[in-house]
Length: 334
Ligand code: CP3
Image 1 (cartoon, protein in one colour):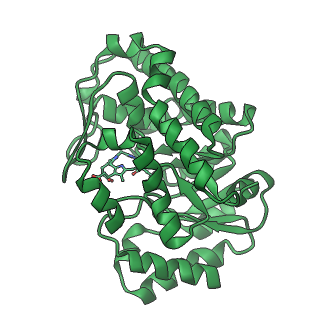
Image 2: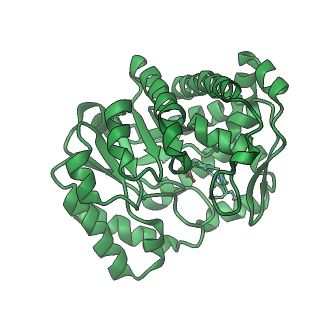
């Protein structure tokens, strides 16, 4: 059994390390391949290259887990919505078409994402057995934000943009759940051994919708994983004190904390769950001393608990890989 899986299932008091966005733009070996592959979706659909990109940070840093090189927006793509990644802007999706969305069938969905599953299979065959291969999905709410383009420039939800009735939104969220469950199962069958659910925009949900848009869909996905014995980590980013409620209601095996929650508060309030992450990725842009002292803070707080070292969000493109290396070295000697 891989170490991460063992920690998540048996709550073993040992440690493990990996980074969100560990494969990506801060690595020169990634940028080289990216330069030759301008279309990001096609890069995710190139199983040979996406497997190679998945393994790049493992080869460079010998991290404990690999996360498959793909994107949460591959699901809207497979549900018939065009997805483009625009340089210096980010993802841009075509206008959501309710009819196309509801008419997609499960076979065509799996067929479109087959290269992702092939990449997982290829990667598993090359990856040391001790290391986890992490599959992931975006939570329904976070996907909805992208699919309906709900964010304003101020990083808030622009409710005027919601052109659907509540019942229709619920229908879309339920349908997304069904496809996400298929995507999880396909990734596990291809060789992944842990799943992480990214609810990156959970913090933007207004209080009266929090249960319906965050707790309910995440619980359904976690229960799906539990029924299949798939270890699952949730990352409901930006929800502050609601982390406690989330943990008590959703009951995932692991929970990734963001950099806004205090690790000591987390230690007292999040029980019966493996804690992962926390360190602000911006810290890695600072001096070595600052990186070490902030890393130490997290390791000290969680030293008597099962803890997976990671960040409070993904590595930033401007991160110096040498600083990542220094952090890992400190972690290994700790
Ligand atoms: O190493 C890894 O973590 C695995 C690969 C991974 C990517 N995206 C590759 C990627 C993972 C786990 C994701 C998840 C993802 N994608 C999330 C959830 C985590 C989070 O950041 O909150 C979200 C919201 C997305 C959507 C997305 N994809 C955005 C907003 C962007 C552009 C801005 C950014 O942060 O990079 C992407 C593009 C993307 N996904 C890149 C990579 C390596 C950069 C693509 C490039 O080279 O231009």
